Amino acid sequence: MRVVPRACRLLSSTLAQQRDLFGEVWCDEEERGQHAWNEASLVVGMHPDQATELIVDMALRDNKPFAVVPCCVFASSQPGRLHPRTGQPVRLLDHYLDYLQAKAPHVRRHVLRTLKG
Image (spheres, rainbow, N blue to C red):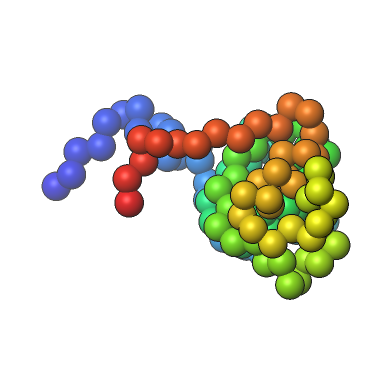
């Protein structure tokens, strides 16, 4: 039997991972998504694929703190993304991070160096 500290039980009972197709319709119109989005005090996207930019845009729109850990750029499906300084199409992950960071002056980038794996 595994003993879980009370603080962890409380935290896990208040956090809910959503495994739905994320988008404006889900957040604004679908009852389950609307409730989850409205109740969220923080939005986290871990390896969110094509939802990365939408997470950033929606969080900025609704003034919610957010963190995304993008994995891929999906350059071919989003040819309109242009690097904020060079004006060139965004094709590299580092350039994608520049693009996302340029969406609002308070968006910051942090590297988590203590994670392994």
